[in-house]
Image (cartoon, rainbow, N blue to C red; front, side, top):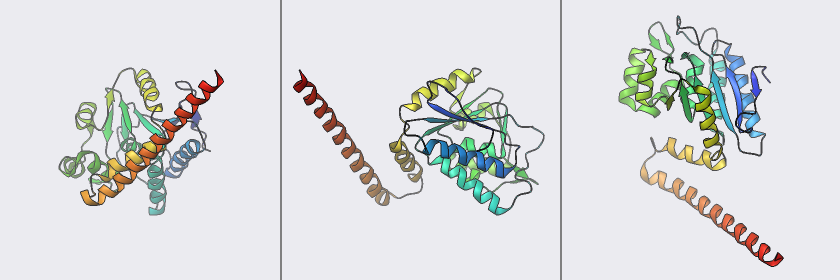
Length: 244
């Protein structure tokens, strides 16, 4: 497990945190993200993932450098694995954020940034890196708004990122913001969360008739879960009455 992956007792142990230094080699970053996923999948209790994205230098936006397409594929799969976890994940941005850190930011369920944050889409020789950050920008913003960012590749200020919905909260007191978000999100981190997230993502590209069957299956699952919950509650009440 990478040494920069740490477990901290944030908010009563609800969060598994990892510090991400986007300037590190891609293979190391991939191993860190996979280690985070391993840590979540190995837990029985509800948890939240908090990714602390270290500030990056503002003098270069080129990424990636010195890697193969296989390296990129492993990275993209690790980010997708994080994105599909049953745990809510929070990304925290201080200062400049680009390259792999931007991928993680766009894959997060909740994004917190400082007022001085700056999103730096990766650009090489004037061309936007054609990785899955491009795909996620379209998912978040729609084609029209994403087109402006992808074709021009401009930096995105905190104010613009907030207006576009690329960050959910700007705060000078990031620790308090993360603490509050972790407590709230810890209540809904479970397997059912992954289903809701999938339905949200597929709603962008799936036709109504095709989506209906998937949503009905999810509704049936939820109804059975609620029935089991009510049955368990009723059994507990009967047991309590019998004991009196």
